[in-house]
Image (cartoon, rainbow, N blue to C red; front, side, top):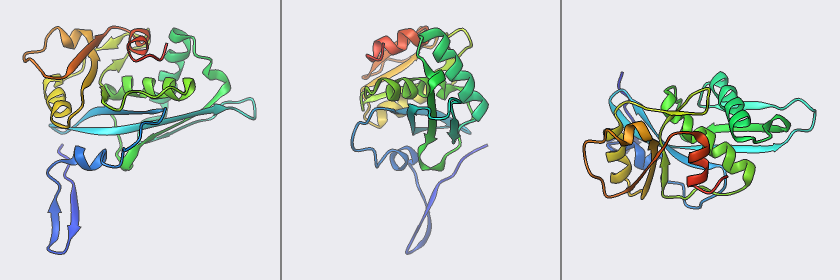
Length: 197
């Protein structure tokens, strides 16, 4: 259950020792609808960029497209966002993409998914120095994720300044970190903390 990343060089296949650095290296600007999330692949935390685009639907039936995460998960998260945050997504086409072709299957990327959709819809950028981690439940609550200390260490190592995590995880942190860690209980609280509500 490990992921290995390699690149072809003149001396042959060489291991990429820090996949997070490669996966987010081309993120120079700070557009609306973009956020970094932390996913565990095997036992290794990697940071990946998620992007969303919302646009007014033309045909009366909104289109949902998911590239890199489960389509059913996306539709569930959109329903939660619409119901609990009163975002009128029923009239919006929603396109979601995980940059670099990585496929994310764990629910710890739910919070980042919700935030990028809201960011695109409001046309307000999420701070470039922010990483989102958390599972979203059907009632809009942010649920705890595993290996939170490992994830935060990777976030800190990559030079980010803010990490949004579930409040239940924040209470159990074993170490002190130099970055700002924001604990949230609901998606509305998360949206308020980063200026999307």
